[in-house]
Length: 156
Image (cartoon, rainbow, N blue to C red; front, side):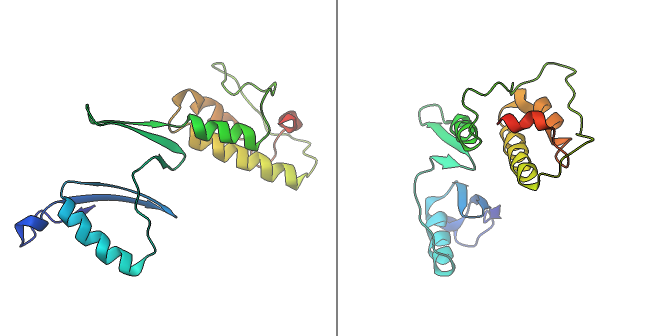
């Protein structure tokens, strides 16, 4: 947060909420002139492309200008995850019933390539659970066995 509410010049007073992540950013402002001045200086130091927000950190941004409501939709991200792990039509259930437990594979075969893929999958599902709470318990269970995943998960 950049707080310019006490700036000497009244036309430059305001707040900029700026969220930067790697090569992605999203800002909320209350003063367009302040934003323009900030971006002029920011572009001197960084290569920046400004555009209307449409997609941020895996979520489609939907903004209703009449009501001012902003919604984040992670369905595109989830479709990309399903495609990435070739899970279309997979027999694995991605939600879990209460009390479901996944246990570490005691006789793990040492397949590092599979373990790396499984860990990527766990990270994707864990991230998706931030916007899809129904995935939270499933994510917590699959992440418990990341060091020694079961052969059952080789189906994806």
